[in-house]
Every structure is written in C-alpha cells, then in structure tokens.
Image (cartoon, rainbow, N blue to C red; front, side):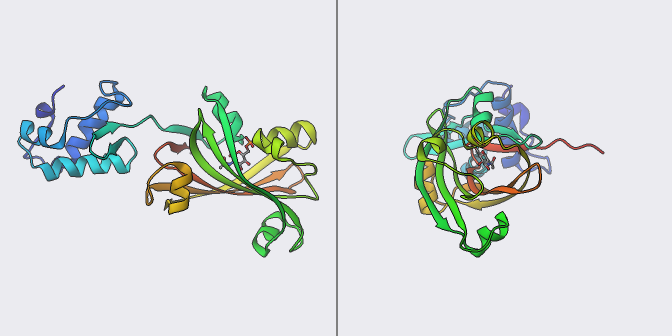
Length: 245
Ligand code: 16G
C-alpha cells in the first residue's frame, strides 16, 4: 500500500494522524522492521505533497509512543517491539524475561541494610528505624537496561540476603531457600519522565517517558514481604490487563 492511497486531504482527520496510522500499519504488518530507516522527512513531504512540518509532527508522535527513534545526524528508525507485560499473574522479573526468551540480568547499584524511614516502615508494617535491605538494581533483558528497581525488604523477615543472591532472583531465594509463599501484590503505575540520573542508567535521554511502578507484595498471611519502587522504560514496555464484565 502506498501513502497516497491512504492520505485524504479533504478528511477532517489531520494529515499528520493519517501518516501516523500509515506508518503504524507498515510496522504492524512487518513491511517496516525494527532497525529499518524511514525515508527522510523531506523526501516524504516532497513525494506526497505535504508540508515537512506535518511529516515531522507524525514522526515525533511516533517517537513519543516509542514506535520510532531518532539518531542525531542519521535519521529516524523503527524501534524494537515493546515488551507486553500481562498484569494478572504475580511474576518476577527473572521469570518474565525467561518466559519471553530474553536472558535476564541485573546490575547491582546498591545493597545495604538501613534503618527504615517512616514511609518504608509504614509500607512493610515494621517499626520505624527497623532494619531493612535497600537494594537498587538495573534490570536487563539481553544486556539492554529495561528498568531501575529499588526494593525494601525487612531484614528480620527475609534473612541471609547477599549481593550474589540479588544478582540472581530475589523471588527464587524467598520461595526456594526460605520456603515462604509469595501470594499477592498490589501495584500502582503512573507516568513520568526520566531524570538525568535515570536516563544515564537506563541509556535513554533525559526527559524520555518512563513508568513509575510501586509494588507491595504479601505472603499468604498478608505479611508485607517487599515494597518496591521501579522506573520502567516506556519505550520498551507496555502493560496488558484482561477485564471481564
Ligand atoms: C519484578 C517486580 C519486583 C520484584 C522483582 C523480583 C515489578 C514492577 N516488580 O521486577 O517487585 O522484586 O520482580 O525479581 O514487576 P527477581 O526475582 O528476578 O529478583
């Protein structure tokens, strides 16, 4: 299909939006694949007799949605497909990545037992200043940074954590070594933009869209087992939830 067959200049639908839909379709049906370069904006504009600004607006929108990315001086390219994460199951990062055929990895940034702040104590239902592990990790799929994760875990509940353990899977240790049953969680997801530090660690640009996720996880008897704050790349992740009426 050609763009001129698609573009209807008399339509009330803005042209930039029609271009967006056209490019989305090319990506969806595999005519444009991850890593492929798009024709320069100027070429598009001339070929289809539309203004360069309009083409730029369409490209920018798709960059913001994470479908395209720009490389300075090189052009605009098709991004990798986003990882679609179902929200019904309570899974670990390691399990999620393995299920998708990615090699899970972590880079440990910080591992320390600290006195719980009021917020952390409130979330974990322990006394303020009680000992908690503070664990900061960059979570990776095939060596590509996906998320930054900060876990707070009561050191009186989950004993014996080490740097080696959290370089692997925390949930595996809790369930297989300590024999606790991780049972339920509640999660809050909100949108934000990457700070300079987050951008450096996630290898994205400052101000790029990210999702902030807060997870409270509980054992069978409702004891809080972790309080986690994560920053996920919005260009690589989307969340899916099934609903029933
Ligand atoms: C996921 C969880 C996080 C949990 C981690 C355990 C979200 C938003 N967060 O990243 O709460 O601590 O898995 O992963 O999904 P691990 O067993 O691989 O260490």
